[in-house]
Length: 239
Image (tube, rainbow, N blue to C red; front, side, top):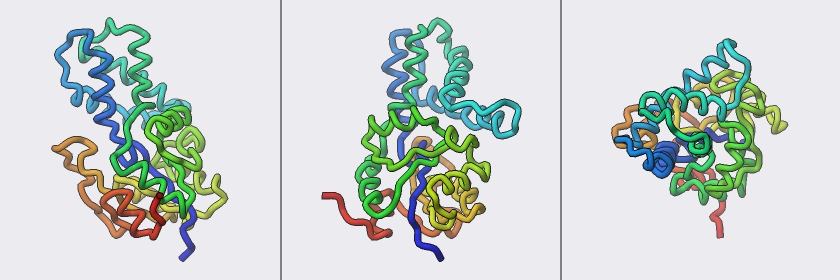
């Protein structure tokens, strides 16, 4: 089996806590509108439109469209549900940019720094370049390279989302390992010949999360967090 040269990471949910980040920003931005809003419910309602919006692109019903635009379009639907049609343009823009400011999980920054000492680390996210770069600056995420949908022009789990990313690193799929908290993402990557690492994120969707609570297959590595994964991969500690 080929030596692993690069780790490609799912970002939303695996590296960053999108639910807490969006709920916090929504609270800060929307509280002046005096609406009775459960901000975690608001985050969930926005996020649930994520996959259907990308499916329009995957299916060929629309041309490739970056995630910032999809988030903005989905927000327009959410605003109607929560009675926020009077929201200012500035607040609308700032709320969409909340996805650029998502906080990393407590182990993310240090764990990635350890993994980076031994491997190329790159994003393999559905997020667009500006979103991922701004998030990295905000949450101290030391990527070597930003890959993902805007680069490969395909949203996961389309096969090309994985194969083209590996090609851009000059590597074969079996030299790259997909790291994700989502079993379906890992399965799609494995089908393209990539190695796989599951990272447990039991509260991505809150305390009542019902999916991806554990590994559902014999992935190459199964870990509790990035520190655990770094230990399993014998990565040196950060001093």
